[in-house]
Amino acid sequence: MSSVWIILLLLVMVCLVMSTGNRCVLGIIRNSVTIPCEYENEGIIERKNISIEWRTSDSLIVHSFVHGEDKLDNQAPQYKNRTKIFKTEVEHGNFSLRLSDIIPKDMKEYKCFFHKEDSSTSKRVDTVCLNVAGHYTEPFISTSSHRENSEVDFTCTSSSGFPKPIDLAVTCAIENERLNETRTSASFYYNKQKPDNSQPSSNTGVIIGICVTLAIALGIAGFLIYRRIKMPQRQQPQDGPEATYSAVSTS
Ligand SMILES: *[C@@H]1O[C@H](CO)[C@@H](O)[C@H](O)[C@H]1NC(C)=O
Ligand SMILES: *[C@@H]1O[C@H](CO)[C@@H](O)[C@H](O)[C@H]1NC(C)=O
Ligand SMILES: *[C@@H]1O[C@H](CO)[C@@H](O)[C@H](O)[C@H]1NC(C)=O
Ligand SMILES: *[C@@H]1O[C@H](CO)[C@@H](O)[C@H](O)[C@H]1NC(C)=O
Image (cartoon, rainbow, N blue to C red; front, side):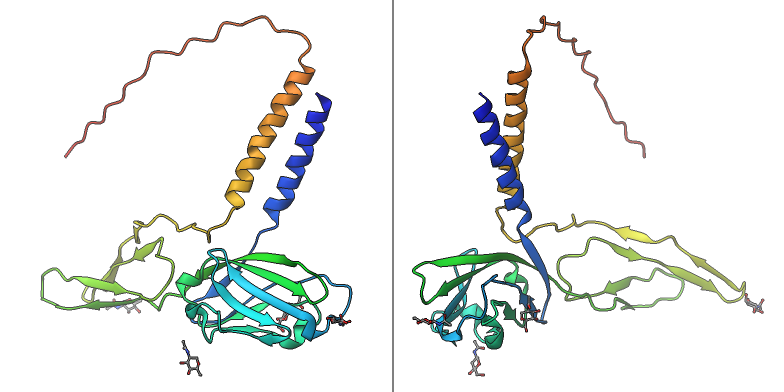
């Protein structure tokens, strides 16, 4: 029984290490970002002996670097002319990828694979998720028609941001020149969108789920081990009668 206990404990520890190993970087639309990948090597590796491949979690080839040279004939078309590996850095184990002209669809996980000439296997060095955001333009207010003593419709415009806005706040001010008086409304918050917390597809959630499950299993195992004395059955408290709520709307 105690060996089960130790195995579970080890699994939980492995889980915790795995679930904290996922890094994310933020890229701004139309700008560039460096997606980091570092290989802790024993010194300088000759560039000719290095092959690197960057792939997305959905298996698109983002950039290939074979025997020290870019090899881009298998590159996925959406990454054409937008990627760069730092040739002078690779010898020091820095396989970071520069991605330019970022678009919202770039938001996913990127995996960096490395192969050294004198070893038979390639290994995955890093997995990094890329989050993408875009600045909104300065909002401006416009009105299409202005009629004396009647309602006026205003339009507040701001564009090209990403993701969708969570909050839009609008304030209205009316000035009466003769009374030298300005009335200002409270801000109106238009809060229609749920915050977009979506992350690039990642297995962190699954790993955390497994960790939680294991932690519960660990707890149960511990309980079973240390429960020496059987507790007398106790009567479960009865649930009260179900409450019924009704809403009355007034107009
Ligand atoms: C590069 O690889 C060759 C064999 O393919 C090996 O002889 C050489 O020592 C390697 N160079 C370095 C710096 O690792
Ligand atoms: C990439 O750049 C080359 C040369 O600058 C150009 O001819 C080609 O059309 C570009 N490809 C894409 C997909 O933008
Ligand atoms: C890797 O190289 C890039 C480009 O020169 C640089 O921005 C980045 O800081 C380097 N990373 C490390 C760990 O040196
Ligand atoms: C209106 O208010 C401003 C500042 O509060 C003041 O300087 C100005 O004299 C006032 N004008 C009138 C007509 O009361």
